[in-house]
Amino acid sequence: MQSLQITRTAVNYEMISWRIGRNRVLTGEHDGAEENYQPLSRKKSRKETAEIRKRKVDPPSRKIAKLRELVALYEGILQSVQSV
Picture 1 (cartoon, rainbow, N blue to C red):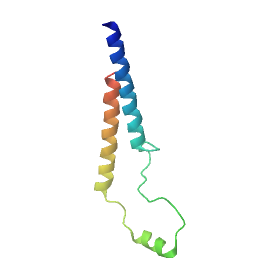
Picture 2 (spheres, one colour):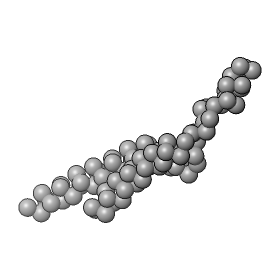
Picture 3 (cartoon, helix red, strand yellow):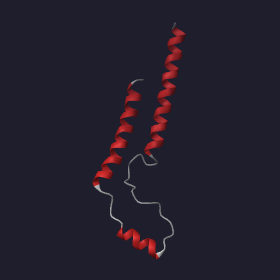
Picture 4 (cartoon, rainbow, N blue to C red):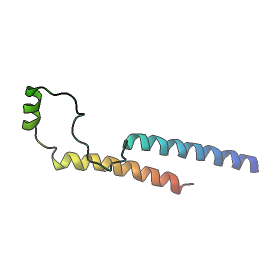
């Protein structure tokens, strides 16, 4: 009976570790520390730079949606840790 509990604890620990690792990958390189909404930088032609100048900044609703996703991931991590 005791070995069954040890096995169950080990399996739960591995599953929680996997969830935390997955969520860290999903949150990204900086874990939401920066607002990186711009496309990756690359060599730009004159036409592309003019288009970028015309492009509007992301609306607050889009920023809020991205932040809500991060909050959901962090809550999942906290729940996983608290269940240990």
